[in-house]
Image (cartoon, rainbow, N blue to C red):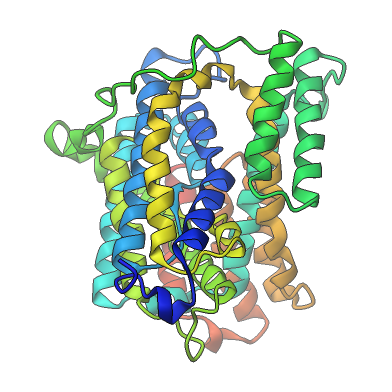
Length: 444
């Protein structure tokens, strides 16, 4: 085992790897709670019944996708990087694809599946480097920051801090409402944990908020702690339904945009996470990532598996850096994290205490972490600042990640051409320009 994971070469031990894997799990365990609540649209009242995903099935799919993805990463790529359904992509899935576009969640899962298969194809053919290089860094950073703002906006809404206002579109909510006070408490306590550098601060903040909610009777008491694993039957294989029932539903510009968005966000989120964590663990060699192809294959394979199980895009988690900080250096840490996600399957009854005000702080803090990419954008260059800014601001204001990306990708070629920098535009960007132009002409 030590030889397989190269313990001696990496200067690590079983103790350090187990502690690192546990730390990573605690840092990202909130996804077991947030993902089912997000994808099920449980917090959105008065929707047609067919729009709601089964929360128990999504919980099981989330845990299994995280476990399988982490195990593949640990055993194949041998990196201390764990995977799970990604924040931002789950919001896009639920609030844009299903809620705004009106696409059935089964078809949305098919979009996730197709993006994963394309990702695999790009990985094994080596085309991923060309696509990555074609899109300017500023737009990549802008997409990450925009998703962060979008997630924060959703969290503020869930908390009741931001509400609808007929005069100004949005406004401040009733901050004295018990549920809103509970969410505000959660924000403060989570910020304190994160500021103090507590490993798993988001997860602990979520748990403490739930406990306080139970004490003040704002959160229901759980019916138990350990229970049976919820059935995955309601979502398992649903991604394959359009292939057997109505394959024509997949041949639309709308579905193309959905697949491209899933692919784009996962593509660059994964690349960024791999490089960041590998740098932190001193695993980079000559400024290159060893076994990068295997790591990207693990990520894309996990997306395919997760889609078949019944969850949104599974991706590499930047929270893995917490495990690296605790000593993880090898894939054994990811194996530990994967096993812990399997064990978590038996604690579903605890989800009864997780309501929208409880998860809101996690969404807001994750948003804070994601907007850190703003500092990497060269705001002094107006031709770059315009598409980057419009990408960022459009996501929360239009309530759509895809629309934000589309606006930014439309303006980029225009501003670059007008500034006399046409030669810096990759031909692929012109192709994306046409795709997103069709998106606005036919869908918006």
